[in-house]
Amino acid sequence: MADDSGKHLEVALVAAERVVWEGQAKIVIARTTDGDVGILPGHAPLLGLLQGGTVQVRTVDDEYFVAAAPDGFLSVANDRVSILAENAEMGHDIDLEEAKRALEQAQAAGTDSADEQEQVRIAEARVRAAEKVS
Amino acid sequence: MPASLRELRERRASVTTIKKLTRAMELIAASRIVKAQQRAQAAGPYARELTRAVSAVATFSNVDHPLTTEKPNPKRAAVLLITSDRGQAGAYSSSVIREGERLHQLLREDGKEIVPFLTGRKGIAYYTFRQREVAQSWSGESDAPTFARAREVADALIEAFLTPTEEGGVDEIHIVFTRFVSMLTQRPDVIRLLPLEVVEGEEAPAADDVLPLYEFEPSAEDVLDGLLPKYVASRIHFCMLQAAASELASRQRAMKSATDNAQDLIERLTREANQARQAQITQEISEIVGGAGALADANAGSE
Image (cartoon, rainbow over all chains, first blue to last red; front, side):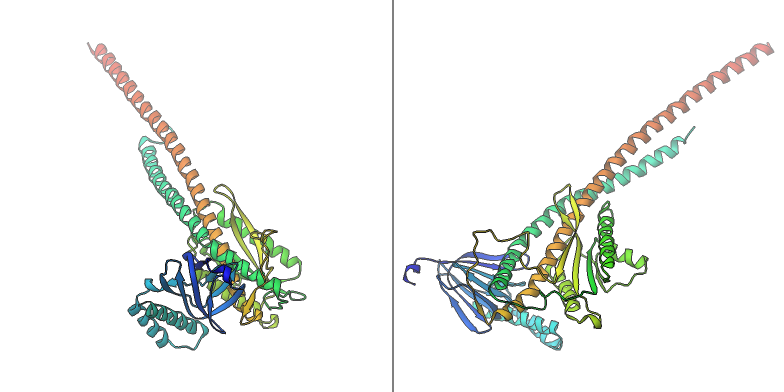
């Protein structure tokens, strides 16, 4: 919508025990189970499950960051975007080497139970977020 | 004479040590309460957004999710009892356990079988001592519960709820915990966790806060499938945080009165010790005087 061009999104990236990031952004790109979705100001209300675990945000100051949000979900309404994930983390807070080691460990532990699969997914999301940011 | 001077002094010394101890515990509890309250506050946004999202899905789709469906004719009820790991917190644990017993009574009158789940060593000790069967229990970190622990508990409870009753599952789940009303008041409370009643009284949306028409990705059912377990975990986390703050507040109060009592006792013992010392001195003087008098009499007689 043309009259939305001056607007911005209020974004909140929330983990279970703290707010990871809160601020204004121009665009949020997230991958839901149906594919990548880019959210601009004026987007229709949306509730989606995240898959792949990374979210990309371009802030109003043209800063760009990636966050890991494994098994999270996204809610958009009235230009407010909330990304909820129990273990949300900022990409630049993650040490890539450490994340890769954690992934290897998780994969070595096996993928038999749902719990182990979840560990692998969390580790993958962290690696991906750390890679994108660097 | 009631007690010897030495005994009184020893008792006073030991009470002084106890006072130092309770005083330290009081201060520790006081500083941890602040942290517990901060944690409860930090968990607020997540719970709020989640509640909002869940009520949005529930309002706009005719959901028929297993977690929200009331089972006809419930036979087995699970009760999650949240207690503390450590004592020295006054009546904290016993009052929440009593509330749990009351709920058990109520459920039994309705003809339901009870499946207990416990967190906190105090509750576990209570059940083990009475040799009651416990479905599952967790201990540790009762005064600083993490979300991971809440998830663990939630997963176990959801699994029990989704198992058919005949195979050892349950039909409803209640939580007994202590609600942190203020620093002075903490009230044991019961909530029904499952089947879910989605819109919570505590954070009900305001009347003018109309929920927008959401699009769902991939579908309302799938979103709900993903959201509800998180919602359950978040509510358990909320209860645990409340319980933790209550535990610390009770401990602070209990330790404060213990310190005050120790102070009173020290003052009393000091007085008694002084009295005993004075009595001893008086006796010594009268003995000396008496001895001197007797000596003088003896001397006077021999001359």
